[in-house]
Image (cartoon, rainbow, N blue to C red; front, side, top):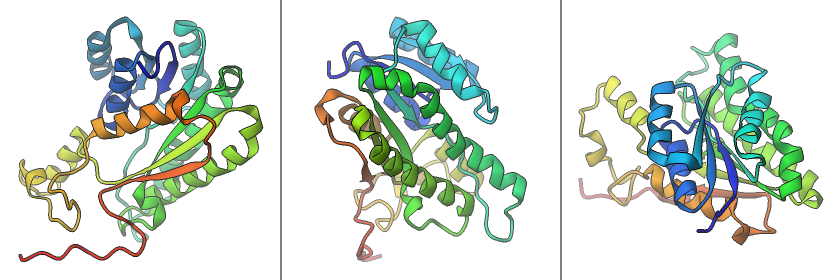
Length: 258
């Protein structure tokens, strides 16, 4: 039980990566506030996880959501030891298709909300000498043509993580960011099928994108999260970690015989 008795908020945890993190945290002894906007999925997850979890439905587009999320965790569990900023949207926009409204929506959910969730939770994290884990993306390092606003938001989240680690190391609150690669979540499965790929597309991902032959699963991100949310990683802070299948820097694309 590497997270025994810790209370952790995981945003966007009714499905996907957030769900993988929440499930692993509970398995390691934590109590988890499940947050999202999908009530049916959230209720099913809380039923599965039992009394070590509680559900809070709130839309992070609302500027009042961050303090409400924190208040829900405190009301249910009485303290906060960790915050996982996982909730995000992944719109596909280019320089030609981006609009101010689309840009502001992405930045609000992916960057503004994490900042103000940290602000709302900070006094409680300071009291517990807790940990913040921000879930970023490998696209923060450059991005794809259709991820112009998404990549920008994740680049900002990376800088925010390092800034807060430097500013608050003496407060004993630690900050970590995962730059996550291509993860096979239910939403990613559906998105690729909607773009014309067959149902079994994930079984045939080219080695250029998945040298192992398979995409990363949410459970792998959950397993990695445990170390950085727990006391084993103390006192390390400000780390930016790439959870990807290949080195991003000085990468040589995989050669195949196809």
